[in-house]
Length: 489
Image (cartoon, rainbow, N blue to C red; front, top):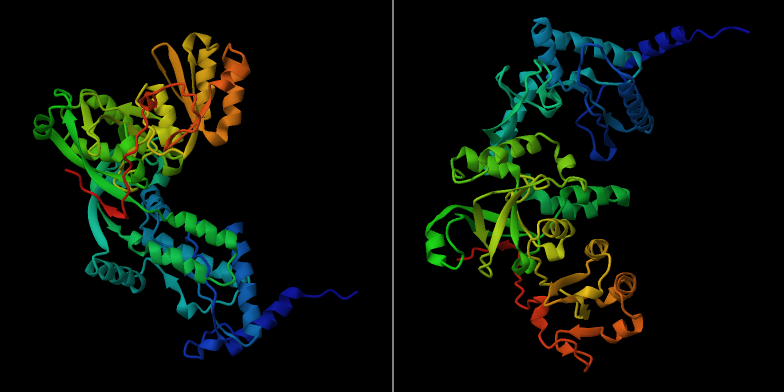
């Protein structure tokens, strides 16, 4: 059987391709025959292409060739993402100028890509470290700047005090600089930002116009944009040396004002504490605004440690690290109640204003925290009907386990005058009966006779167990607002 010399066949075919310039792209053609296939450009590392590059570039080349065989004019460019950290690190390590190593690597990449038989028009090559390319980055930035979409503000960065430079997250290993192993610091430096949120609504709505896209992909994109209706209002920090009733004196002694961000302003009467992002607190400390903070050093260390973590780790369900601002407090401007001030890792400085209100009656994480530190829980949004009951406290057995299970299932309760008062949403009545049967030393039938359904108009049953609904601290004064900013006082 005669052996087929594939290398000789490929050589002849490549000569034909080169002769007819089959890879050349005609740009000025009818739009109906234009096809654009774009790959993610590789970073030209010193070693050359890896298997991941081959996999995707072969697939996209097959797509381009199919379109070409269907007489489409295909634009399938190739380029090199050559402004990046490896070139900088390699230059520091070897003492060779990064321009020399980068362009040598690009030559290797071109040769390897050609060996795959890919059809690239190298006349349309893009190299991001050349002036022909990055002049357009500069042009685009100026368009943003002219249209008030680029702005400067201070934000935390990874700083290596030994290298005296800012480090990307990829250059940090175990809180140390990957180059010199010096522990990193978090510093607030002026940086440029783009107002990408200005386009959020358009991006969100226009996803519906994408015909042929899988629904799951569009949902992922919408979740990434994370559209939410929001409000914000002003609050103040005060030094802990005046009572909240001395309103005028307290007002004069406020040390800083801040904006609170919320997507649920209708629950604001239930706010019993506020939570700052570590980024916001470090910014206030650097500006000398928190000199009255009693635990200043502990707070700084806490913030430095937290903001070194990736955001995804900080916002995970497992992340619940808190610290109180000792010696400072604030006031809920909607009802005049004094509220504590805390820092938490899950509050991100770049989201909203970097400060959120905590309403433990209507948020699981806030609820768990309030129970742990014995903070007030004020229910302000409740169902039209609820199950209300009471019994003598001495009838309750296994109290620790009973309270734990009640908290986990949002059975609202309080102890007062040797009685246990409780209520739940009427939809959770089955859980309530299970809880009572398990933890209360009393005949179940007798307990059920003491359960009443209450709605906004009063008790449905005529057999009233208690006369004063204030035993539950229900509040009817619930605030609503349209999207926007609310300033109080």
